[in-house]
Amino acid sequence: MSVSKRSTIIVEHLRKQQMLDNLAKGKRLDERAFDEQRPLEIEVDVIKKANGSARVKLGNSEVIAGVKVATGEPFEGLEDKGALIVSGEVLPIASPHAEPGPPDEETIELARVVDRGIRESEMVDLSKLVLVSGKVVYTIFVDCSIVNADGNLFDATSYAAVSAILTAKIPVLEMQGDKVVDTGKIMPMPVTTVPVSITQVRIGDAILVDPSSEEEGCMDARITISTTDEGYCALQKGHAGAFTPDQIKKAAETARIKGEQVRAKIKEITNYGR
Amino acid sequence: MTQTRNLIDENGMRTDGRTIDELREVKITVGTIKNADGSAFIEFGKNKIVAAVYGPREVHPKHLAQPDRCVLRCRYHMSPFSTDTRKNPAPSRREVEISKVMREALEPALMLEDYPRAAIDVFVEVLQSDGGSRCAGITAASVALADAGINMRDIVAACAAGKVDEKIVLDINDTEDKEGGADMPVAYMPTLGQVTLMQLDGRLSQEQFTECLDKAIVGCKMVYDIQRQALMQKYFGNETEVKEEQ
Image (tube, rainbow over all chains, first blue to last red; front, side):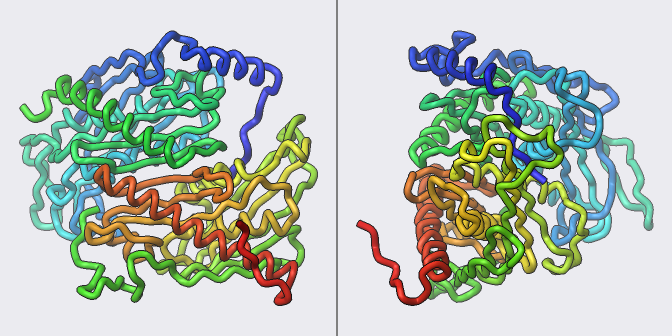
């Protein structure tokens, strides 16, 4: 069951007032412009045992993503497509509030939103990952481990997953009778486009790109928008507040412009399209 | 998802015989669960969903209570027999996510500060599912909350729009959800003019995005009229016609 978030009312209200006072003067607590992301660092091939991997640092948020390839049955209704599963876990090392155990609703939402951004963009051409139609397909796991949580895990995790997929080299498998055999050859992941998510939060009337955890603590509402070169592919509004339609349209425009910049950076680091 | 077949025919009719701006048939009955403090049953196309509200009531376990406001608890659940293949009754990750976005869609409408140290529980049970069950669920839950007499700023109405055959259409059905190009569920408070839930899966261009959002909001306003009529029907019966407010 989904329960309203707890508030530590006095601290929260004081901090929120301080945040609102600053935002009214056009300032964020860490001096960034409203539409400015924190420094983004992406490193690829950090885990040699994985088929593809990436470490992303977005400010102090840090995520490691790894791609592993297996074979299995296709999803129901998608007989001619390989399976792609993106998942995320906030490790207990990531913050004093994180605990081991089954994922809570926020972590489930995080993993599902990152998965949706990648899935709906049709980034990976899953029709090229079929061995026997309806029976045996490639199953691509993209597991994301959040190792330090300092706000905007949606974007940090999404960039890590996308970068890991872009640099993944997967084994060429073939069927010999009923058996799946590894041919020893490798191929790049069949990628068609590069989805990029941009998360913004509303605090009072201010809309801020890439919220820090302090800003997330004070947010009224959150919106995560994923784009590709051609347009929008996924969106999720979160948190117990609302947006006006105009605020959403403006946020969508910001997501397109900022997304373009991040996409260029990811393409450069992963050598995509070269 | 890339579409494999056309879902709109040459006359502009959709798979269930609707035009692109038409809502499925929506019927709301208020107060169907006698034990609940508020309840509503909604038929939204083939969706059959019941929403029940208990509260404001004492919070158990007690440590969840908030000194300055009420906690809202929400559960979205699909009955095992509600789908084509039996659904495992244990809550799936999808249901956990929908419970969360549903709570977040309802919370802005509720004056939770009026009920400190209490809890309001909202249960949404999908008995038969069609496309758009989260929107129908939010719509029913909102009516159930009003029926329970909870202080509210506005009623939350929800409706999806989406892309089928490169056209933006209102209120996606199950087939269009599975085979169509994009699905955008939206929950909206018509009096306050605020969006409380919005999701998107599927690809939309810039123009399509704006058109889709605008269309979904038009749908929410249509749903809102049906919600109001259902509440009027319960509390004033047939004697009072719904008068248009200017």
